[in-house]
Amino acid sequence: MNNELQKNAKVFKALCDPNRLAILELLRGGEKCACVLLEQLDLKQSGLSYHMKILCESGIVASRQDGKWTYYHLSLDGRDKAVELLKQLTTP
Figure (tube, rainbow, N blue to C red):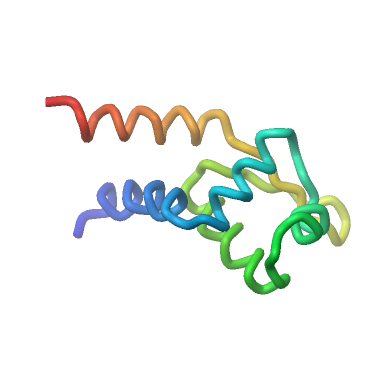
């Protein structure tokens, strides 16, 4: 499988899980610390880390470190690329 297809598949993988959709919904309200996400989701630290890795690899979510905490936010560029990808794949 070529590199572009693998990259595109990561976008759809990010969107095909209820936990990741819940995380995206929370991030719609603005940047959140991982600790805040943990309080609002029924996940353990390892589960949140797994889902955040997939969301960040897709480009839809970006992160930043501040001391020992990681903060996550929606990436507008990643969102635009995901929308454009869906358009490309569904346009005859």
